[in-house]
Length: 183
Image (tube, rainbow, N blue to C red):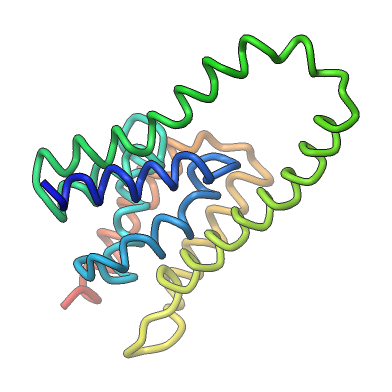
């Protein structure tokens, strides 16, 4: 039972202090799961990729995956509950008071401070994922992965292509160009 409680509390802390959504929570999730020692940086990067292509919020998907990996189905339940319960509770409470305080200069200041911190957390997650997706310890920079990354940026930025379409295209490209790289 202590493992389940540990998952609940760990993901409860992430859910409570992980401002900025799933991507901003990823560095906190990775740091926290290191205490279990069951998930490597490369596996965590795969977890993020899986969380992207499955329905639902990335933080909940990541919590469910980690919980399942660490303690099976009950672990998935307690980790998912932990990451969602704080947000659910906060939204219920805030919805009661938001209209009263939305013009408060203190609240405006709080949000002005949280926004850049959120961008920094998302950038931190992007750097972490870039390191694990574009660089391998054995071979250094993976030129195929860098090319797929650059093409993805171009397709999204220039052509505004649908993320689902890009995910499917890059999955097929990975199967064609990268399957020989997997040992």
